[in-house]
Length: 99
Image 1 (tube, rainbow, N blue to C red):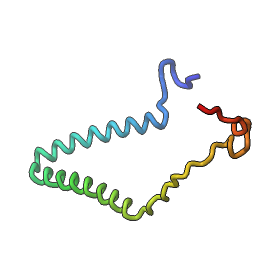
Image 2: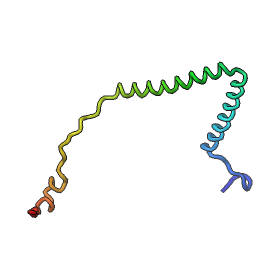
Image 3: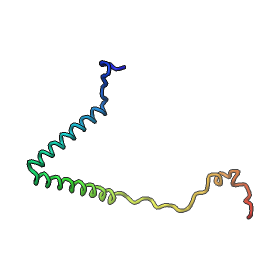
Image 4: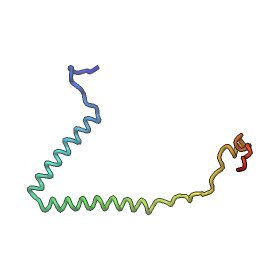
């Protein structure tokens, strides 16, 4: 079934994408650490700004969604009749016993 040498397994697209994410994230951590060592104040300020902007942006999106979504239809509190009573089934024709 394998087209390569014995023991050689090919990665599918999802696994390749996962490896790319792993390598990119690891490189990002290393670059961020290096920048933090070289320019600590600027990097911390930019990090704090990006974090605050991200949280506030998500809150703004939630507010926009709530403000532009129409209200739901009111709930009708009248309970519909069971299907057996509507159709005149056998249960609907049985007389009820008095207690």
